[in-house]
Image (cartoon, rainbow, N blue to C red; front, side):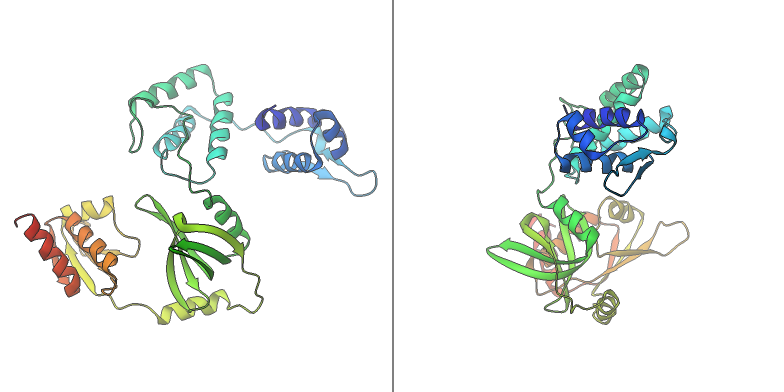
Length: 319
């Protein structure tokens, strides 16, 4: 029996009883104690009002022998949920199996007419990353990096982490996680390195292990944030943008770039950021992005290293 089916059957079983125990659930459904406990916790999280009783004969009972009011979705709410599923396919998002089971549960809750509408929408709407020859509402095959869910689960309990990164050699870093973000189809960890007292970015693709940082003598979150404020880099890239460049900026911009609009119509603006001119890859990325913005820009300030790359690119294209 699949997990979703088992949980639904267990819900019906316990809702028709004034009292039940974990042992009864184990015996009735031939499952282990740990599985029974996990199923009960999931049923509680779904809204069934279970009350536990302590003592040798303790167990559970359902408050008033009833469940919370049934959740119903409007036609537009159902469409909104499934369009969100379709739009986020092939983005390597975490909790893929949970998205799959959620989609299956929703399909069971809606009418045949609503299901037909979703099939039609799936044929008409085409999002980036979707295979037009094989669109499928439940085709959530875009597996994320295997460490991503473990990383998320660990940081929810503690943002102080030991991460192991394999890049040529294997290195372990104690960090305070500042942000976990996705950029250009890859997940990245922005963390404060507790050994070097500086902000550092790590690729989740190179992550091989993550563990809670057990050291009790660790800097507080406020101390870390205060330290980072003192390390704010001087903006060495300042560019004015016109409406066409702003449209490009909205399509894609690096995480650390800020845009301030310079008129009330948001048709002109100025962007400011910092690029480490000593890092070749960072310089190339900035040059590529400036070219991506197009011709509707006016450069006020940029490191010479970035300008050199831009000039080389223009020569390559005969400009």
